[in-house]
Each structure stands twice: as structure tokens, then as C-alpha cells.
Image (tube, rainbow over all chains, first blue to last red; front, side):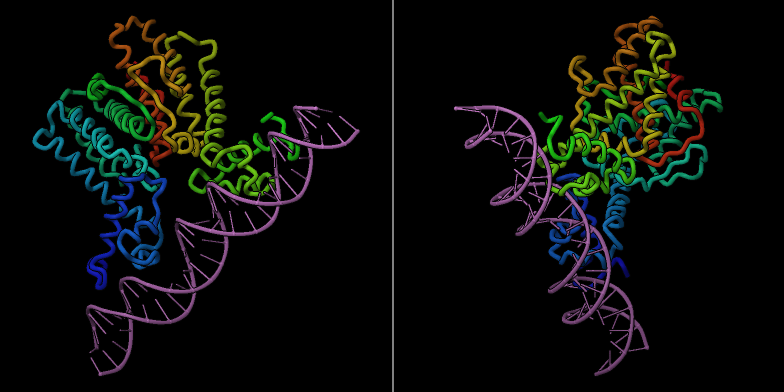
Length: 187
Length: 187
DNA sequence: CTTCAATCTTAACACTGTAAAGATTTTATG
DNA sequence: CATAAAATCTTTACAGTGTTAAGATTGAAG
């Protein structure tokens, strides 16, 4: 019902696509509902038939980008699950994704909608972290790390990878070396 | 000349102060030049006598907050320079600062004005990183770390601390443990 | 065919940043 | 001191923003 409207084709999906394209071009700062509507050749209030407000559109765009992100992450460790280098490959893929799409970091984390509870293993709604965690745990087990060190090591690795992505895109950090060497020293 | 105007007292400084207060209250998203002007009981175009545009005001606010940030960081290692725990204290202070001011992370790194070149030791314009680097190097030297490992270890530590601050404030990560335990496992 | 709900447009409102022109006051100049 | 110049602030105006309300158009259901 929401998927196949009548008049314009399927405006909802087209708005999401055009919105993401606009993010990639100019970033979140100059994002505008009216620009997206114009890009779809539609009046500037038409989006309100599909989204309650601009935040809902951005949220839908975010889900779409996150899925794309997850596909990249999954394929980076495909066939190597449980191997020693899996977590290293995953970390590099995490960083590479944001290097390839410089606007996505600011965009994805612009809203604090994401919540990750590190104290509770079953309560995160951020899929990339869930994948990162399971991959890390497999590696910890394979190297015989004591269980009580799992949580500390996981957070250290995760914040380092996420921090590098933040520094490279949100901030203007430049580094010509290989990032994998950086977080590999901790494995 | 810019410091002591005639009419309103010193509007420039008052705009910066009111702006920072507004950031602390509502965050960067709902920040507005006109609100700041109104808070200073002045017409909404008066700021243009002191700042070329809204970005220049925000930049001035950012410098002010960064100075405040630096004071906190410096006092956290005062008298303990060169000690083994200095870098740990500094990292914790770095994180605590953004916990105490949840809006500052998004605010400080909203503009990509900051540039840090990890390949060139003398070309960063982000004072907190300079302090972090010298403190880390002192520690590396004191534990007899080989020189060629300095750069890797520095980046690993720095991105981890910065990443934790990002996760805690920009994103909705919750963790009841002690963060110092996390990045202490790497020293 | 008629009814109804979903979708889209037009019009309007409050808010935003910014530019232009003019008024006011401090500072500099003769 | 008087006058000119510069700095500061106000008023007015304009284009752009998100959002709401009312009405038009169209697809599907009865």
C-alpha cells in the first residue's frame, strides 16, 4: 500500500534515493526537503504524504544506507568467518566504507537515534555493531582469550575503528599509512 | 578596537558567550543567529558588524570552547607530566569533558575546519591532539618503546579515546564500566 | 457508478541567513 | 573645538527553510 502509489510511480522510494544522492553531493548541512521534492518533480509538500516530517525521511534514508553498509561489511568477511584475520578485514571495510562515502558518517550519526547498550548484549539496534561483536568474539575464542576480557577488548577495538572513521571523515585527519596496521597491533 | 566598542558594551564577546550557552541548552541543530542576537537584546543583523557570517561566529565560539577544553586537559596531567599514568589521566579527562558537556562533540566537529596531518609532526591546528601527542611520547619513552612504534601506538590510542568520546555523545552508547580500563589495556 | 481513502497541489505562516541603506555614536583629523 | 571618517547598530527587504490547512485529483472498493 505504501509501496506502490498511483500517480508519480513510487514517490516514497524515489524521495529516499534522491535524498541520499543529495547527501552524497552536498552533505547533511545543505540538505533540504524542498530540494528533494524538486528533484522528484513534485510539489514541496508532497513528501508529507509519505513521511510525517523531514526527520522521518532522513531516518528512512539512514536505514537504506545502513543496509548498504551492512552488505559491504558482510562481504568483507564472507568465507573467512572465524578466521584470525576476519576482525581486521571487517575493521578495514568499516573504515573504507566511510572513506568511499565521505558524507555518510556525519549523516548517519547526525541524529542520536541509534542506541547501543554495551552492558546488555541483546539490546543494540545498530546492526554494524552486532556484526562486529560476533566477529570479534569468534576471534577472541580462537586465540583462547579469557572470557572476562572479551568485553574490554571488544570495546577497545570497536571504539578504535569507529574513532578512526570519525577522524577521517567528520574531522580532517590525513594519514598515508595503512589503518589495518593500527588496530592490528591490538589483536 | 574590536574588543571595546561603544554602544552595547562589548557585543562581540557577549555574542560568543550567549552562543555557547545556546549550544549547551539546545545543541547545534537548533542554533540560530537571530536567537543569539535576541539574547543580547540587539537587532538580528547587529552580529554582522563583528562576524562576516554565522560560520565565523560559530568558529569563534569553537575557539573559546577549545581553550576551555585545553585548560581541563592540562590540569588533568599537571604535576604528573612524564609519569606512567599521565596518558591514562589525559584520556579520561578527554572523555569526561564531553560527558560533562554532551553538546560539545557535535558542535566542535560539526565543521571540518580542523585538519590533523598524522604524517607531518608539525602541522596540526588542533591543540588537544598536540598535547595528547607530547604526553604519549613521554610515556612511550619512559617504557622504552622502540621509536618506530611510536606513531602506530599514538594513532591507536588517540583514535580510541576520540572514538569513545564520539560514541558516548554523538551516538547513544551506554556503558557503566570505567573507560580508563578500556584504553589502559593498550599501554 | 458512486464513495472513499490515498495522494498531490496551492496558499499561507513563522522562522532562518544575509544584503542594502540609513541612523547613531565613537574616534580621528585639521 | 569642529568637522570628517569610521565603526556600530537598526530598519527594511528578500530568498530559502519546515510545516499546516484546505482543496483538487486519482485509484481502488462497494
